[in-house]
Image 1 (cartoon, helix red, strand yellow):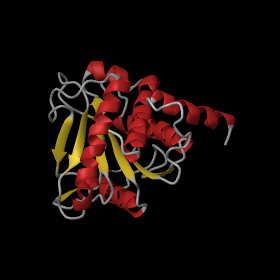
Image 2 (cartoon, rainbow, N blue to C red):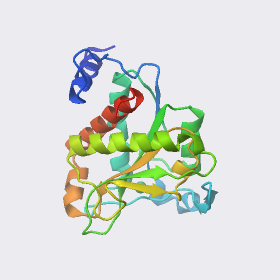
Image 3 (tube, rainbow, N blue to C red):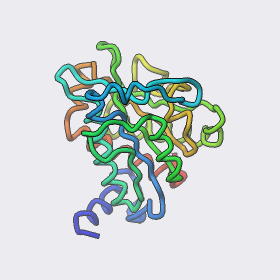
Image 4 (spheres, protein in one colour):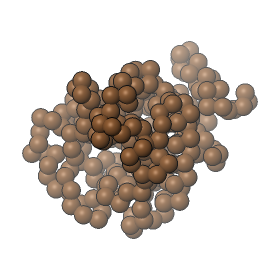
Length: 245
Ligand code: ZN
């Protein structure tokens, strides 16, 4: 372990409210799945991303471009930056991390393949990272939870528990309010998303804020906010896997 990694590993439990005696590598032996939504190259390949796939309940497009701010900062880049910070945080805490893409200049993979990558890794928990393209007057974050449909039947309860832990950590560490236009109290049930319909591991999708809202967008594009978002996800994962709420 490098000195830098050791420092991060030592610092994170303090940031997440752990006791001084908390283990430096609380995620040792754990596997965490991260799906940074969309991809930077999706804009250039409509033929690939528009082909239909079966999301567990219905046919939908393989992937989409995702949204962007008025200033042209793409959701795909936001998702990837947060995922990259999170991966580093989780590794410092001892986890093995499985990502569904490793750059922001490719195309895809399809949403069904993203789900399979994480299922096959038998992740202990997973997070799909997105930011919303909501109404310009709407603000805040929403955590999307799976609805039982067969493949995901055994992870509904655990995903709901993770959603609540994540909501608390994300709100406290980033200061982003819960959505005033999506779901209720920052949570929304969704049965139309492959990542949630096909998951066999505890998983939620977070819309980190509304990229079409100028107040949210100013935060979302800043590296400082992105680091805090990742920090809150790591804190939630440590708490969830440690059996805390
Ligand atoms: Zn998205």
